[in-house]
Length: 42
Image 1 (cartoon, one colour):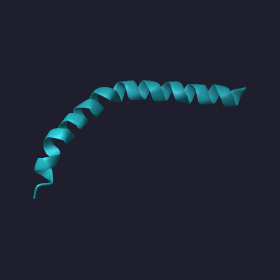
Image 2 (image 1 turned 90 degrees about the vertical axis):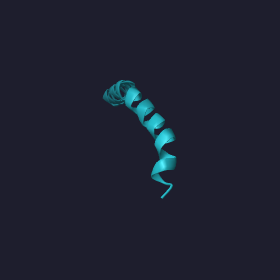
Image 3 (image 1 turned 180 degrees about the vertical axis):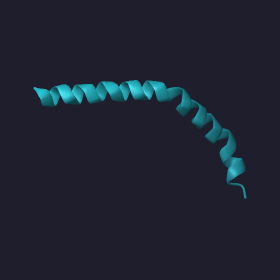
Image 4 (image 1 turned 135 degrees about the vertical axis):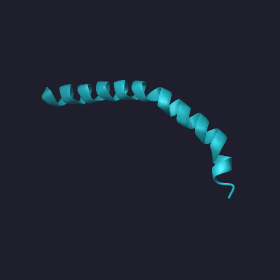
């Protein structure tokens, strides 16, 4: 019982964390797409 409860809580907190991080991930992806050629041109 407690085991399934724990897994449910961790899944929920993970989803919340991903929701909070999503804007940062999108920004990072945009930066990566635009800046990677410049950064690695050398």
